[in-house]
Image 1 (cartoon, helix red, strand yellow):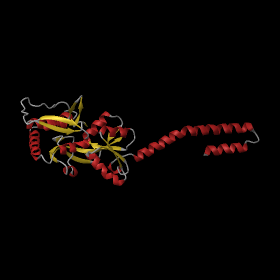
Image 2: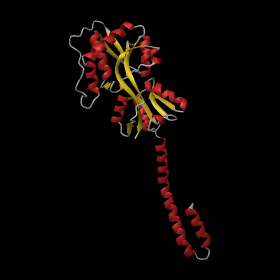
Image 3: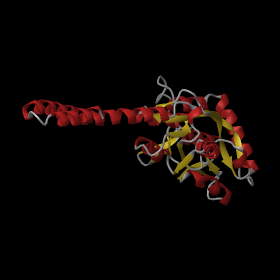
Image 4: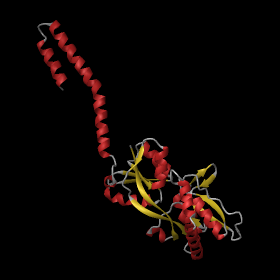
Length: 289
């Protein structure tokens, strides 16, 4: 506005001498151009400030924000509580889809389990995990309520695998800078698999618990399930499906067990039974740096 006023003043006083008005008009024009050039930078700076002020920096910032989750996961359950506080929950079939939406600015953050979050951040530039965890949780294997005998047998197998260190080694093989890749699980050569086949339902996009290596599903859950089958005398068959289809697969008999970093919740306990816990994790929040 100062530039415009200066230009008007020059025009009013320049009726007597054109040559005197010219320098002032030229100066005003130069100032106008300078202001015009500076405007985009000022606007960008203002937008950056607004974005920074609206960013998710802690759990306390979640109300009113757009939160990305994987459909049917514990993150989905926890995030849903914020809908009453004005938050929008965007649900994706795969965690990676939520990450891409975050990178594209379509959502403010992603709520997901800690270890997959670490894998996403390690493989993606411009993301970080907030230091404050959202919640702690335990993973367990889900089994049909009609198969209490299988649940009891798996619990016995898990107890054995914990006691002899097998389960710890499986976890260390996938988690830990100093141990990763050093403890690959191998089935004993003399396993009797006369009890048949155990079908495991999973969602194989949850590294390091289950993910594809070539065309094979590998990870902590896959190795743990194989070790359980080795103890109990089963062949293991892994069926990859959407996460929110796993419990339905157990209920319908399409699968015997559900293993996909599944947290025990009261809501899920109404539909399936769970074994003892085999791992602990945290729900964390991923944001753009």
